[in-house]
Length: 150
Image (cartoon, rainbow, N blue to C red; front, side, top):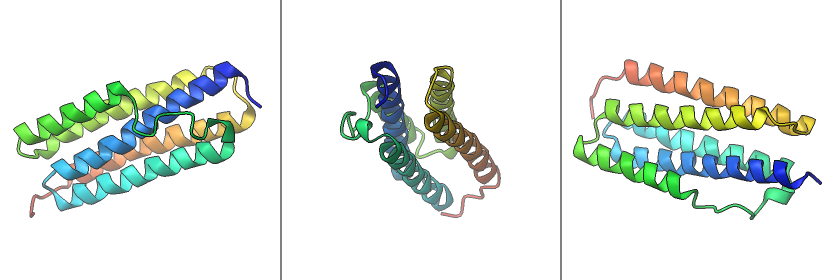
């Protein structure tokens, strides 16, 4: 059993992962590029896998958090959706917002990793944070090589 403060912080992190998952779904719906649409859908699935990993490692978290994400996350999704609509699904505009959101998520991981966490939590959070950092590199690489054919 983990203490209340650690449980609360991990619940917050799961909320941010929900926001990220939902945000990627929104981006996939708004971007014109088929390549980026596939990537965003894949990243949404990866975020769900991260949530599942935390749920399995820490069953006390299951069903405690709001599966729809946070109010702040919904506002960011709305902004990405609006920006995508106003820019006609411009990949660069959407990518910039995605990267801003991912950097916020990395900051949340770093904040959690500053806490005294049980070894398993520390291990999972480090692994997931590095995965998010690699996702940003993947987004950069795919968007840099993108030739709009759609």
